[in-house]
Amino acid sequence: MKRVRDILTGAVIGALLMVGTTAGYAAVKQYVLTEASYPIFVNGTKYEDKQKPILNYGGSTYVPLANLGDLTGVNYQWNEAKKRVEIVVSGVNTQKKVYGEYTKDVPNFASVVGISDGKRIEASDKSHVLYKYDVTDATDGNLTKYVTALEKAGYVYEADTSTGKIVYYSKGKTVVGLWIEGYDFYVLLTSD
Image 1 (cartoon, one colour):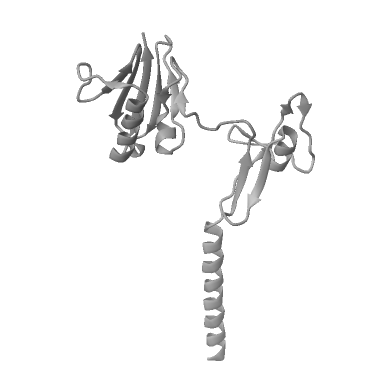
Image 2 (tube, helix red, strand yellow):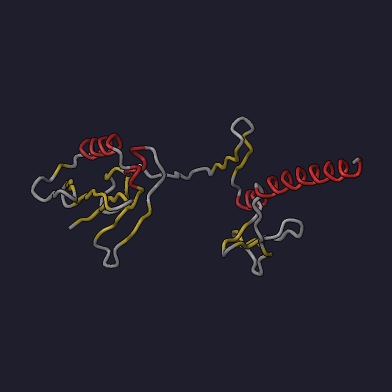
């Protein structure tokens, strides 16, 4: 009887160890990076560090932030309170308040509503530029903010050309079109 109890106790402990180890292993993500076979130059200076080499994963290049910061002069720091790395690039505005195409006064949707910049898509004929955002950013409140910013910048709603699908605002030769299609919200800039 003692032998059966010992075997059962061993089996239960073994099962618990297996469950605990498997659960812990499932939570760990692993990535296989390879050492890059190409050099990186910053302002003519080659990056070399045998202890912290350049790595490649899925076609993307990875360089240790501290080394990259030292090479480029970019300031970086660990914010303990917020548990994040913060990078500061002096003299660089990370988000434009206006779109730069055609005129310098078309408000940037992302800047107005406080979201990340959209994806810029330029037409091959350079006749217009399109910015694409996630449809979840086109809330009624955000659209109202953006239309208010357009009107404040002097853009006028074009009732004659607007449709149920696309809303147009214009100022001089510059036209701004707004519409939602599927999961995307678009801002179109064009000028005659």
